[in-house]
Image (cartoon, rainbow, N blue to C red; front, side):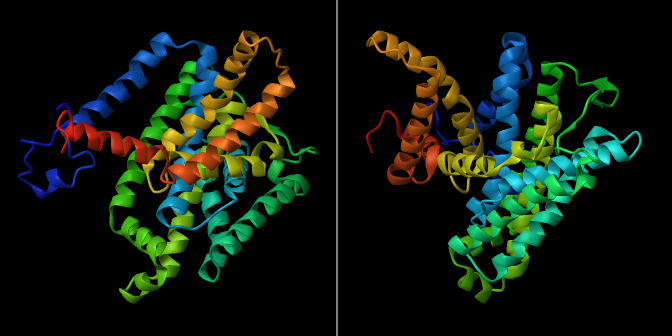
Length: 358
């Protein structure tokens, strides 16, 4: 009744091919962006911006990049943390070595560094796939850890591999408050998500999905597997690299190689699995789930323990968080392998028919 397509006629090809062809979707996205740009800054504390919303935005961007590679092209990758590290250290070197280097330009150059790194370690995808490809991309993680710990040039001659940035500004405006950093991340995430959505809807995205579904059949109909796979690695690594640069510059401020460990790679992969493979919206769902779940558990488990007369220690909360997190991942894989995005799509489908039973 409230989510109907009746009467929404398309009279041009452009109207039929727009990203959100249903008016209700366009209104919902507009309201969501309005809330993100207006309501959130007016009602959310600096702590929530710094500890919840900024990590959510950065992880959402990284999940979009991983989803392009894993969800749309079907290439399993366990080296996303390495691509984030290359993006962060690449942007850092451009930022500190080139005088008056703009922040946005440094972030983009860090993304290009991650692109080159991703193409290099994406070459095995031309010969292997599945578990073997996952192991090959995992090698990128170990290589990046060794590179940033042992080669001092990448860390500007830092003995521990730790680096730091300060006095960040964009177009003359300083990024010295959580609100300004939130706006900066929000604008970049909206732009990247819009570009990624258009990309997967085009010819390149259809090639990726054809390779994902059956690479032999895709080659038969004229799709070049080498070009499709390497382009997916390139685009995915660029987005993940920019997210890594944001993670270092905006969220951490100072970091070392351990900040981009293999745990980050698994966390990004879990975001894509929980949110939904092959869905840009699912990347945001997965990031929100991963970011908010530890906070909910840390706040909720002590309350539950007090109600039943059991005192739960900090270590117990940490262990319970890992157990619940693992159980939820198994549940999603077994019950809803298409993730939260599928549940969202099913809900919209039900609304199209409600209140009629047919």
